[in-house]
Length: 593
Image 1 (tube, rainbow, N blue to C red):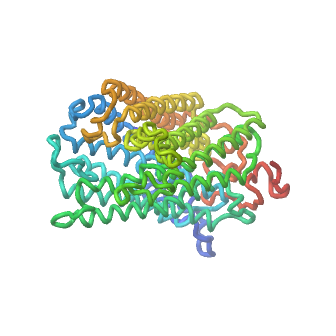
Image 2: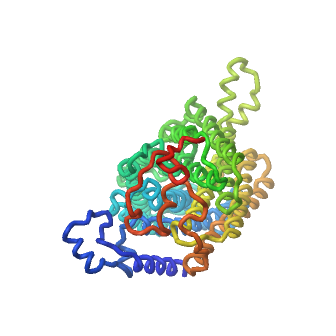
Image 3: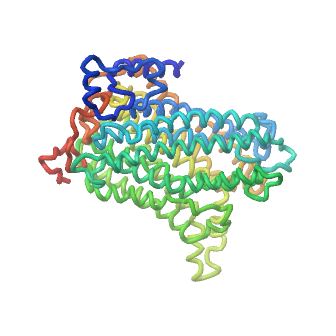
């Protein structure tokens, strides 16, 4: 029903728009000027949806299917959490085998990152970046459309193959609970997830190209809005790191094709070569735009310009530099968790997040914040990311204290040994969960903030506040229970019975897994109410349409055009000379702080 309503919304949206040609950014010539005089070409119906290369429609499609992917990921996470209630077995939810449990566990992680967080970020960027930089369209619009459809087809294939006994490996083929996987389904699982990542990279490149090549007169990189700047930084890290991950996958796939896998294609090793993407420091690269969204929402909600704008940009850039983790691959370097660079990055990642949060607090204290759903969601998202960085620092604290121990070999022996043991526990999952859920919360904040521009309707404020509280409560229960279970020595590879051999108290671990399961349910409810709000407010047209062009008093260029914007976005090319062109027009210089 939701899918049908969404397609109907796109059909109506397309039928009400005037299109000069299928290629929106084509320069009008004398010949097509004559055609325009007789009437513009309108493309509606299914052709308007499936054949669109309008960045706004592509962005809406990413948002809709990204929310759906998030709900799938959280449903799988609920199954995993309740399976962990009876530790050391696979009998609670009757997965049938340890491999099926691993398939569900690994797919929940893959779905949360590649089916939810990244497509939502790419979707918001695809829609908003051209508007924020004053561009008439996205660079390479057909490539962007290709990226979306390749991503969608790829995830459908991947989900089907995983549940057809495929997936990204098999943890322990010798276990009594093991069930043989299907080699052909596994091959297709690997190829389909590669297709998904290639598509997301292509979409990211289109956005980066727009930022680099289509900025208006007077807008340098230092005048970029913080959201566009954060997408540029995050996208740069993705473009550098994800090809390394694809290389790991390609090597595994090639070896898997052989009669006897040598090492990389061994079913027990496939996931181990890929897991670094969900580990620190790399996982923080997928939450960088949370800072950019909060940097747009909080100053506008406070009615004042962002103070120390350059410092905020530097903080985002520093987080990008500290989140590059393609080197941190335990499969090839088992001792990486004890190396100085890895430990330093795990601790220092706290600094740019804290500095950025402090800059936002300084700005809001000098203004008069207007309480709104997007403001509450932004604050919650930033707090969640700050907690993630704190847990990250704790996670690597063992080797850090160990370096101090060189002064006295007998000093703090027991504490250091315990902190080193923590590195192999579900605290690593807690870091991942806090980072990715903070990204989801930040994205939901952006959806509520930019909903008038994206959909032409304001979303319901009360529902937005409810989603903020639900998501935050779910993260506290789900992520917090993983932190506690990590202290109790529950191993991170929960699909292995060995993960529970050293736990301090099995009853306590099982209890906190029940708590975590409740938290996962709350996370699902939080995302579900957002999807429901969009359905009612937008598709059923119950949302507020008053003053949708600029209901918040925005500071950046997207609020200077209609909602939703027409083809071409702007009636004339904007000229800017500062990062807040609507608050400080070009003639005034915009140097105030």
